[in-house]
Structures are given as C-alpha cells and as structure tokens.
Length: 93
Image (cartoon, rainbow, N blue to C red; front, side):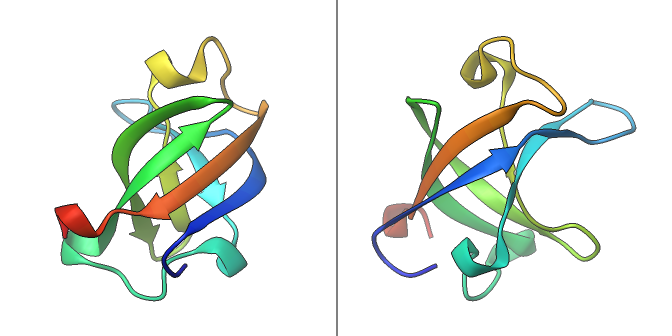
C-alpha cells in the first residue's frame, strides 16, 4: 500500500476468542509494504460508506486485517461481504 486510496471487496471474519473482533481481511496486493509499531499501520478506512480512523494489523498467520467495529458494520457480521477503501494516515505514524 502506498500513498493514495486502495479499494477492494472483503468478506468479514469474526476472530475466535475473547473480545470477538470482526475483521475485513486485506488482500496482499492492497496491504502495507511494512508493519509499523506493534505490527500496525495507521489508516483512514471506509467500509460500505462509513469512514473512521483506525489501523490495519499484521497477523503472522492471517496476514493483514482491518478491524471493523460494530458501529461501522451496521448489523453485518461474519461471512458478510463489504466494500473497503483504505488510505495510509501519515499524521498518525
């Protein structure tokens, strides 16, 4: 991922375990070039037209993941398709 916005379609994935995080997996061709502090890279994300500041996370097994909170998902959950746009946020490095 370089400067500018990248867009893709994803299928939401609920992470097992405590907390029940829901993620949009980031395809390799849309992922950041390198991980930042704690394996995260700050981005501005938009999912199905709802925008917020967050970070994409690098998981050693699952690859890059975009956490999508319930307020953004608007009732969508595991297995539901979403349209995603992410842009690096250099102001939060």
